[in-house]
Image 1 (tube, rainbow, N blue to C red):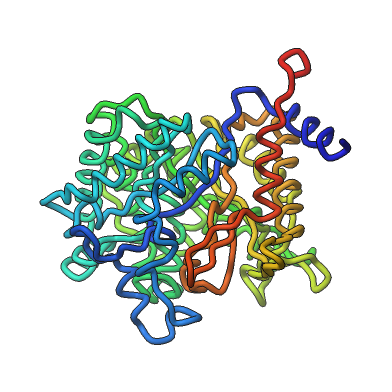
Image 2 (image 1 turned 90 degrees about the horizontal axis):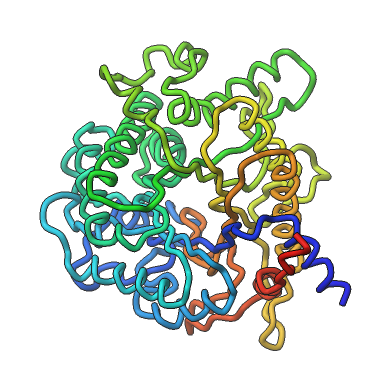
Amino acid sequence: MTQHRSLLELRRRFPSDFIWGAATSAFQIEGAARADGKGLSIWDEFCRQPGAIVDGSNGDVACDHYHRLEADLDLIADLGVNAYRFSISWPRVQPLGSGAVNEAGLAFYERLVDGLLERNIQPYATLYHWDLPIELQQRQAGWLARDTALRFAEYAHVVTRRLGDRMASIATHNEPWVTAILGHEQGIFAPGIRNRRVAYQVAHHVLVSHGLAMQAIRQAGTQADVGIVLNMSPVSPATDSELDAFHARLEDGKLVRWYSDAVLKGEYPRDILEHLGADAPVVQEGDAALIGQPIDFLGINYYHPTVSSSANPASPVSSSTAAVTHMGWEVAPQSLAALLLRLKRDYTLPPIFITENGAAYEDHVVDGHIDDESRRAYIESHIAAVADVIRQGVNMKGYFVWSLLDNFEWAQGYAKRFGIIHVDYATQKRTVKKSGQWYRALLHAQPQPDSQ
């Protein structure tokens, strides 16, 4: 009874039309890497580079979602979510990144969208979650070429013409910072390049492609809301020193302001342009307005705070005593609230969604059950933080837990589990964890209208 009351109390803190969902991405769950005409992506290639993936694995099978679609849709429906966020694989739809469309690939996403709607679940699609068609990377250096932004807009138009009449929401990109910095400066994600000048030109071209895709989506005709998803983390200095404060400001500029200023203000932060110097991107006339055109929503992916110092520009943990996840990321729901309040203060915001939030922990299957209390507590505390900022006037519209399923966790392979549903990769058996059971109970806790 106490737990039921607390679930009701938490639900009462949210408006009745709040969107509750779970999120995934194509490369991480679909598998079927070469099935039915699908082309290869830069991640298919990256997985085959020795040492690139911690456990030497790849996404060839992953969760085999492509072949288990109906059963997975039933699992989603059983959770009680009213929305599902997924990404569309560009090389599944356009194997070469341009030109011919793969009908079988589009048909898969049509089955996915229609299956969601049949179960009264709103489809929230993301057009790009890092799986660039390998042909574009090999032929023209991928996002370093401005032409890739034009090809992306064509792909966005193709998808919207086919599915736009049934979408609730379309995000152009997931986390451009990851595409640019992890993929092209640090080189720890596909395509594995280490060059700061290249990284920031890529960052600019990805944002240009966002602007072009926004136009293409709207021209294709859809009632769906259109926006972008950015990963964000509040950055604080490790000490009170002026030097650490300087480094924290710089890190905030590169992680948060570079993307949010471009999208929400139509400009890049001046201090970061000065910091980059000769590595600053080439920007054409009209690009700023294109990138800064109004969006219908902003998706925010949040996992942990960032602490910056002269010795360590970006640490995901503030102290040796802080509680951390299996990724080594600090558990700090108060930092999510601080981030959202900062955005409200600094920008004129569209409606906001938390499009990813969750935690990796080591799971143990005992008699067919997974008691992942740490993950459950993480999710509950961050949902409560969202409720706190709603009360303080932030226009929050929805929350998507990451992730629906354990999956291929990029450079970590299958060594890290974020799912609220456990996947036995040998058998593909799905088991709802304690965190998933709690989330389902929360979503089924229905306050009476007069109690809101």
